[in-house]
Picture 1: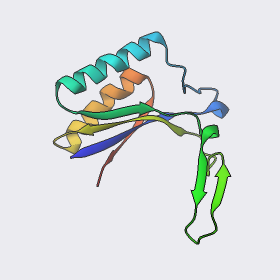
Picture 2: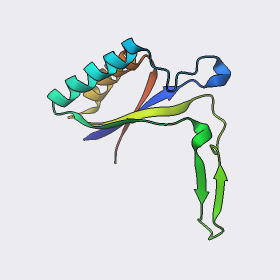
Picture 3: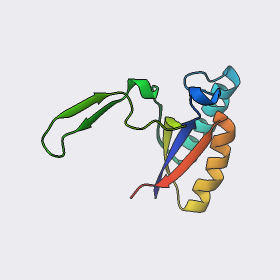
Length: 114
């Protein structure tokens, strides 16, 4: 089963914004963690994301062609990056999520991919 693991950034209002500001130690820890996932055949894909200010919301459900700059919600956290892992079960996902949180020094959210 595959899992989406979102890396959560606490945002500038909290005074703890971390997007794009990984320390050398955090970057090295994430690289080592990714190498471990790859060696175990569990790594599918990972990427960092730009900040919410770079978002564009598109809504054409009713054919109105709405295109708005910026995020649709003003949440205290945003997704700063993500992994997709291929794992045997949710317990393994949660165990690896703890390791991922320590490696990137951020909160992470784990969700099964349907």
